[in-house]
Image 1 (spheres, helix red, strand yellow):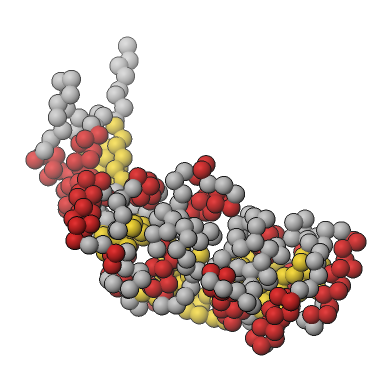
Image 2: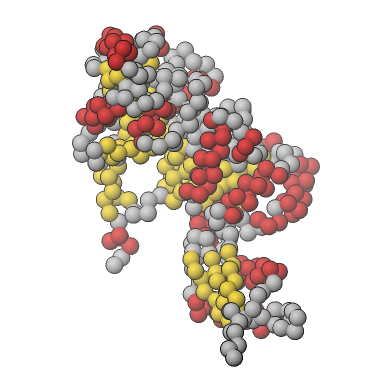
Length: 450
């Protein structure tokens, strides 16, 4: 069978954008619909700032929910960018779920959102949220005055009325999914990770060529991981822009705590992580901890030194020393010096990601591996310990992604010798941009039977 025969027509799911003014319970409603605590929720306006997509399913019909930040027509600064994200979400959706707070009634902001929705021409489902009991249903009925049809009373917190709302959403979205040719595996997953305010979102915006993610020079602007299909050098990747990893999960409070857990989840979900480090400042213990989490998760790695435009010759000299001293154990990863603001060398990111993916998926045949092991054992045998010299009897590659090797030995091997084998594996076979795991299985001693 050829590779072309493995390509199937996969449906592109209908998209439903969830919009409304700040703090009407959009993210709580999203969590209720998808049936798990995924969107970050906190009783403070403005926790959601970007367009964030989730897969949803109701009565056997699948669709994508896009959670957006609260929309305000006269917004300035970051709030204006959030409003722009909501408008972009409406433009790219098949239908819109407009959420209002039934307990406070309609406000001028709601009227302004209605104008945007009318201009879009998209089908709209109106959810009157926070209707927790029978008495509040009369308040929901007053939402007819928005002119968007029947308001569906719902309690995102308790689930009341969510079934009727979901039926209405299914009626609003198109029946026939659009078809597209896509490989079974789908786009490769790339997570952009790093401590807060190193320029992760700016980098995603530069790579995608549009203002995809809200950017502000306040640390911690991104809270939810954001998935975005982006074409780089002719290849489509699923980029995940994540919240900055805080120093310690337990130090983060409220929505930051959940966001930090999501970031670690994004590392686990990715195949390659681009770790963004601020080149204009000294490499911190936090940076090293993030690099270590990527290595321990067994993900491919590209290190992007961002804000290169803010470094002078002296800072670059110090950075070289820091890389030699602190990043020596990550010498196998590609390093790219970039500026997400000016776009300097961002084009080098694509080849570095491809290289890391190729290394991550490398497979060595058992014959080639054992010929290699035979050569290094003959040239550099294991040291004698307590009068015994353990030998490598046989080796095999247990898996790729990341490359994991199992050595069957006649006795316990020193950790230093295992590291030596790993180093020689890299010299021989490359493995650029990927961790290499080497496990040892020592043969059990036969017990003498009397």
